[in-house]
Amino acid sequence: MTLRREVRWLGTVSITCALIVGASLAAEPGTTSSFHPGELWPDNKGVHINAHGGGILVQGGTYYWFGEHKIKGPQGNSAMVGVHCYSSRDLYNWADEGIALAVSKDPKSDIVEGSIIERPKVIYNAKTGKFVMWFHLEPRGAGYEGARVGIAASDSVTGPYTFLRSLRTTAGTWPMNFPDVLKSGPLPTVPIPQGSTAWLQANLMGAIVRRDFKDGQMSRDMNLFVDDDGTAYHITASEENGTLHISELSADYLGFSGRWIRAFPGKHNEAPAVFKRGGKYYMITSGCTGWKPNAARSAVADSMLGEWRTLGNPSRGTQAENDTTFESQSTYVLPAPGKPGAFIFMADRWRPNNPVDGRYIWLPVLWEGDRPVLRWMKEWSLADFK
Ligand code: GAL
Image (cartoon, rainbow, N blue to C red):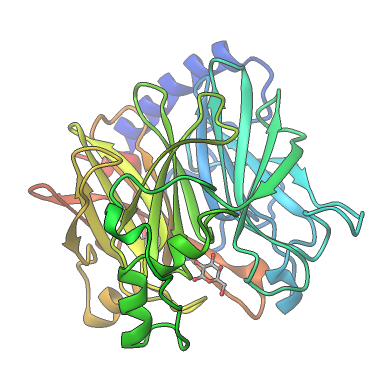
């Protein structure tokens, strides 16, 4: 890239956005003009951005980054504060917009302090005028057994968001790609340990889908994707993290339409991030190794509820980098501003012993034909997109 080209581009965006958003807090472009994956990323107050497992909503030309607010020490792996929001006009410089969804002090609340709130994502519903937040929610003190989603909404993008409810997903509906023959007959038991051959077999036979049919399916690592026609989808690690579920949301984005599929049964995908290019849907996921990074996977489909085909590990680096996705785990893929067909891969380099120090790995999505690939870049900018 040349610095001049980049400054000119940012200048255009800045003027346009100033007209649209008026007095937004969004940081002025100019202080920083490149991404530095893995390094501390100071906000407009000089504090490392605290929005882990995040995602980005573009609204009126301003970018809003929502993520898990972490605190120091292992206790920071629980939700002690809530969901943090930042705004930016150029993606490099971020202004602290405060806590968009605060945890509750009420022990009866699903989002009580000390519960687990992960991977929050916000989408805007043009029909209702509401900003809608979905996140992975685990009730306090029960580890990851709850496997629920939380839903919150606000009239204002930066919040405050009001917590509406928590639930398990798609209760009482069958996946569209679930054979009738698996819907009845003796319920296969779900063996322990997970991951054993017997467990995999039961998973493939839909044992967990059937077990959870009435009360709703498990949902842990999750994401949202809004298609060009406004249809929104929830993508989540379900069935004890064995199988992804992709579900169409209702028109108000506050629930499910009942149309959903299972993807990659028994393949243990987590951290799904979906994007659309040239009419095709792409997904980057991780494997399941908790906070430890593992090799990413990629996939493609002709429709969100269609057949997903694997494309393999997208990382193109050293063996160690490929095996750990550059020491990170996917959280979102953002269309690059002003660059049709270009995308930014966003990932977390977790620091579970001191979560507040978790780092952000943003890399350009490159292409080998129709295959998205990732290469390490110590420093880069949007001008690097050809
Ligand atoms: C990861 C997951 C994170 C968090 C963590 C807890 O696999 O992606 O969001 O849930 O496990 O161990």
